[in-house]
Image 1 (tube, rainbow, N blue to C red):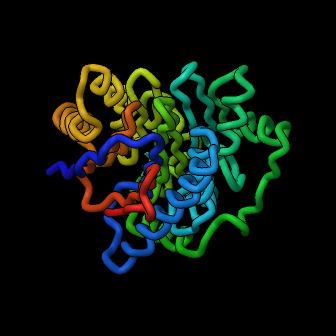
Image 2 (image 1 turned 180 degrees about the horizontal axis):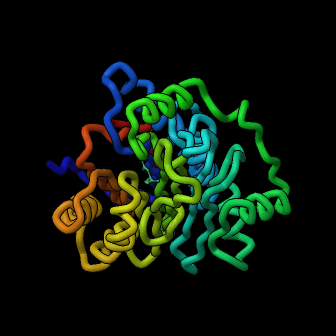
Length: 303
Ligand code: ASP
């Protein structure tokens, strides 16, 4: 069953964030939604003060990376070696510039390094040691595992190993889509899957799979089964549907339904179009989200 949410009216600026598709327990749902609404509020304040869509997307995602509840930055899930291997990307829809890092060792804010890659412009995607080298050359300091790995992440890792599972869905990936007077940006950040093999990269840092933005249509950030999302180029398929005239809500719903029909899989999508309308869809039991738009006194959120 695909759940989708109504499309709000167009706004001059809009930021919409997600805290990951999955199955957040009822007891933890309010905390997850608060985290998303807080990220939307902070990014919305930046936009209200005249900040750029790029700055707002990075601000929203770094806020979520710093919140240990989510599977990104601090609190991210662990790979088969019991350490962090982080993926993140950002894309802006004007000149279609993008930047990403994947299999990145511990750094506090992978999305900020992705932004540095986008601004640098030489390459789009940096992996593993090369990503760390690029980050340090741009002034980012490596973090210690002790600072970034939480007790909860260790417990969940141990539970997956005890059950003998190859890799387990962590939930809690984060993303943001922003529109400012027709200019759109998408950003996504994740630890990926629990106990994933060393070197595994998911959809989040792959432009077109987990993250895509085009001022001709809109922006999309995905969360869910990365292997399936990559095979469907799902974020780009949402943008193609917007281009063909779909609303953000129906584009998100149809892209998920097509994925399920073709390759199976679970997840969720957040979408804004160039006019400032937003839409979301998921086929998981939860996907927490928060949004803030020009003219709203408070952020809205849901699950
Ligand atoms: N899409 C992410 C990945 O496969 C995980 C998630 O969104 O929960 O790495």
